Image (cartoon, one colour):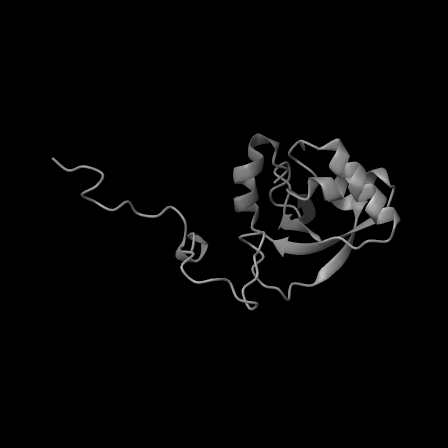
Amino acid sequence: MSTATDIPAAPCLPEQLQPQPHSTPPTSDVRPTSSVFARNEETPIHNVPMRVIRRPLPSELDEEKVQTFMDEMKAGDTFTPIEIIKVKSPLKTNPTGPPETFYFAMGGCHRYEATKRLGLETIRAKIIEVPASQMRIYLGAGSPF
């Protein structure tokens, strides 16, 4: 009879997303990334209009952190850009119609909320294009495409 120790488990993640051993100390050339889709440091930063961003998942906010971010934004501090997921697809109500563009913010909830409460028109963001099929996994029945 075979046991779990006899057969190594196949990894669920692609090799480039597997945790890396920490045997060597990080160097100045190694920088952390915050998204599996945006691994390129040269991804341009845009000022994205707040009015086009959808937040499909409810945020759990730390009010003190939001207030701190608001104070720092008022003082002129520049924050790390949030990541916006861009999906271009026809609506599911009109699958043969022209594709529409959707912008989703899945993270950066404190920066987003501070920007929103201050009434700022734009937020600094990196835009990552993702296929509609991938977003349907996260949005489920609430997916517009």
